[in-house]
Image (cartoon, rainbow, N blue to C red; front, side):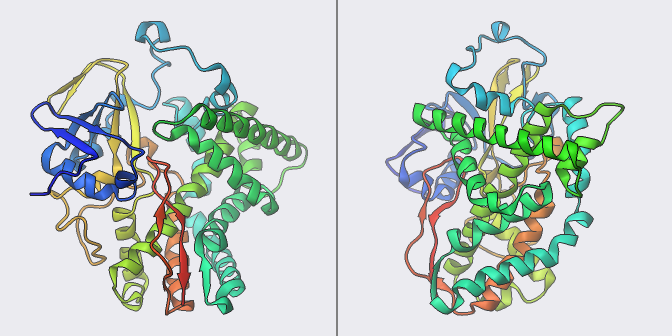
Length: 415
């Protein structure tokens, strides 16, 4: 029986949990708390968030695919009907950028947008980027190899995903640092207990981001190139083209989702591998072992922890009744640790042959960039450990206070 730490209170009888998501003891090691939740209360009402949460693998997996739940609700009901507050005045630019986001809409709009974008992200298409990713990773390691030490996020992990997604979309690579700044400010809107400052920073970033993307769209309309943005501008679906607002939302979500989570995952994976004490040579022996190692780091160190859904109709799940307009939260990272699915779930075991992880979600909102993220991880992780065989942690890594994302503030390494 796990002892209960003082930052969490679980009333299993009432299925009620009190937990401060900004407590470093929680976000620094959320997996330990998820283990407690699995033991005492896998489906629970989180008092501070005023919402029901699911951690069980089968529930999370089913709810991600359940069409009685959706990412939006205002397509079938008004704010008045649901008793929802009016949008915040000071986040209007952020709301505008999110309005047509692939992550936030439902069919038929979602189907149309996803169909136009999907072709660029299918595995056979991203596979062609393998040589570019390898060249980029080697070039970055060349810069710091002789130093005997590096802070891996800024010298390596930050650069690879943003460079590749920018190339794919058709954004100049030199915009990389600016894209990272906008993205970091933008995702501040998804943090639990965000402040007004976080909201203002996200809104500013959304406005600047959208203005910039609008200028690139104008260039590509006049002069198309062989990139995803030109493809989205000039391709029709059932006689319809994407509007500028749809193009802006889609480009922003692809740039943000296309690198933010992968940056975190590279850092999380390297940390997990180094802390495991396992020999990297055995973890990356061939394509198959590499793939299994990557999937296990995704399972135990997922970069995005929570995905929310609206109940689109009255429904009962696990004895909990939801009315239309109620919000539920699915903890993907906790589902990955369900003891009913995984033996010894808190242990890094790359030779597992158990349930596939849910780190990329499931159903119609399954992460569109998953093939690219997986390709990047399967290339850069073995390459890093191959080039720097004596890699070790210089100091204990510190986790960022950005729950429900999960990533490191820095990752200092020596060799």
